[in-house]
Image (cartoon, rainbow, N blue to C red; front, side):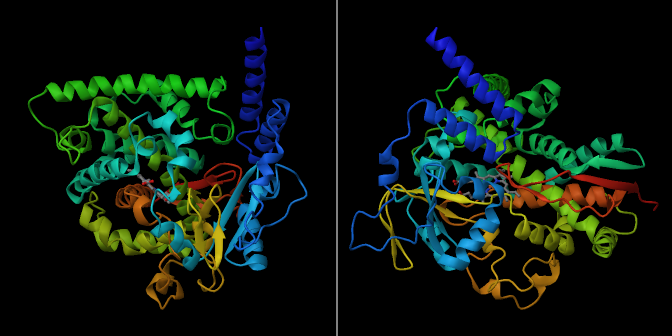
Length: 501
Ligand code: HEM
C-alpha cells in the first residue's frame, strides 16, 4: 500500500515534470515540494555553506532570503544575466546556493584556469555528472569508471575519429542530408531545430555506429534513443535515482533494448573475417594499456556515449547557425558564393579538402559557438580546498566555469554581442587569453568530438545552402530557451526557398 502511494506520488511528480516541459523553475518547485514532504530539509544543509575557519577567506557569497531554493528561480529564468550581474558586483569568483547546493563560479579566463589545470581527484567530474550519465551510457564507461580509465577510452575513440574516417563520412553525411531534404519540397516553413536534430542523429549513427546500426534506425529505434535521452533531464539531476518515475523507467528500458541491438551487431562483427574500416571496428580492436580488450558492454556504452554526446550539442549549434545566416542575408549569400568558389560552379559532391577550405563557413560556425555555446556550464565537485584569486573554495562546492559568460565578457570581446565571423581575422583581445573561448572545454575533460562536429555541421550546412535560401519568418530571430539543459532556440521556425541554379 505504502509503495503504491509512493509510486502514485512519484508518478505525479514525473507527470508534472513532463508537463512543464523540463522547465527549471517549475522543476525546482516540484522538487522542493517533494523534498519538503519527505522531510529532507535539514538545517545541516545550510551549515556547510558558512565559513568554519575564520582564517580562510571564502569567495563572496550572494545572500538569498529564500531558504533552500536560494537563487534557483532567478538563475533558472535568466542564468546569463544572473551571472553577469554577479560578476559586476562580486568579481570573477563568487558563490551562491540553489536547491540546497552551493555553486562557486569562476568567470573569465584567469579564474577558469583552476578548473582546466586541476587534478580530477581534487575537482572531480564524476561526482557531478555520473548520476546523469551512468544510467544512460551504462556501467564501465565515462564517469562510471576512474578518470584514468575514461582517459584511455577517450583515446580509443579519438583514434577512430581521424581524417581518413572523416573523408569517408562526408559523402555519407551529404547523402543522408539530401535524402532527408527530399521531403521539404521547393519552399515552405519548418521547425529548423527539429529537422536538424533528426539529421544529426541520422548522420551521427551512420558515421559513428556503422552501416548495420544505421540501417536499423527506424521509428522504433528513434523512440528508444529519445527515451534514453530523456535521462538527461533536470529530474534526473535533482531527484534521487531510486525514485520509480515513469521517465526513469523508460530510460532504463530503452538502455537495455538499445544495448541488446548493439550486442548483436558487435558479436556479428567479431565473427566476420573481413574487417570494416570504421569506428566500431576500432573499438573492437582496441586494448587498454594492460592489453585487455574492450568487452561488448563497454563498446555498447561507448557507442551510446558517442551518439548522445554530439546529439544536443551539434543540433542546437546547427540550428543557431541557420538562424544567424537567415538574419544576415549578405553573409548567407557570401557563404553560398564560397561554396561555388571552393567547389566549382557545378557544386560537385563535397570532399574533405573542400570542407576544410570553406573558411567563411568555418568562422560562422566558430562565431555561433561563441554566442551560443551549447554547454553553458562545466562543473566539478571540490573534493579538497581550492585556492583561487585569494579565496579558498571549501570541499563540497560545485565549481563551475561558463563558456557562455567567458565568450562575451566586456573586456575580452569587442562588440561582444555582435555576430561577426570576421572578428577572428583581426587583432582580437581574446586571442591573448587562454580560456576566453572554450566551447569544447579544455584540459583533461576536453571534448574529443570537435573535429567530427565541424565536419558534420559544415557538411550538413553546405548541402542545405546549396539547395535552399533561408529567411527569418516575419523577421523573428529566436529568443533563447533557458529552461532546457542546453539552450535551444524558442519557436525555431525558418522559411526556405529552393535556389535556381
Ligand atoms: C558542437 C558540438 C560539441 C560541443 C560544443 C561539445 C562540447 C563539449 C564540452 C564543453 C566538453 C567538456 C565538458 C566538461 O569539461 O565538463 C565536452 C567533452 C566531451 N565531448 Fe563534446 N561537444 C560537442 C560534440 C561532441 C561529439 C560529436 C562527441 C563524440 C563524437 C563528443 C564527445 C565528448 C567527450 C567524450 C567528452 C569528454 C568528457 C570528459 O572527459 O569528461 N562531443 N564536449
